[in-house]
Image (spheres, rainbow, N blue to C red):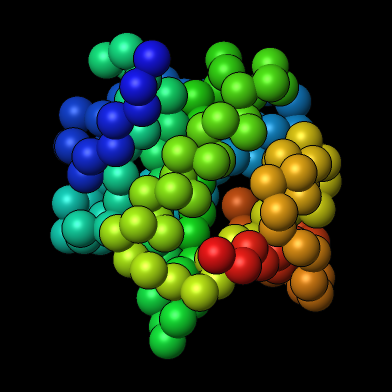
Length: 154
């Protein structure tokens, strides 16, 4: 069961945007929860060449975006298919992303931001070797949420 990582196609972006819906408080991560994010995700120019599909056995299991590459630091954002969340698949998915970013972009550090209510993801990130940094408030999805910055040393 090899993981394959390739640039995200338009069809995959549309599938994620229109069909991936999370339950409960995790609906925060639905693409249509923020119109600006949705429009950027669906626009090939907005995605640029820095959004990738993660597939296993020819099925899309997630995606990630390299949001920023500054100096020796790569910032990532990632999403896993809703039916796979909370089922123990996050660690393998994250390790695949970290390996790809490390091998292809050679950062010394990888950073990400996560909503602090998302304790499932935070647990996965900590287990993978991320450390928690500061928290901050951010206006998004029609409200203000607390986020945590996390960092991984390659």
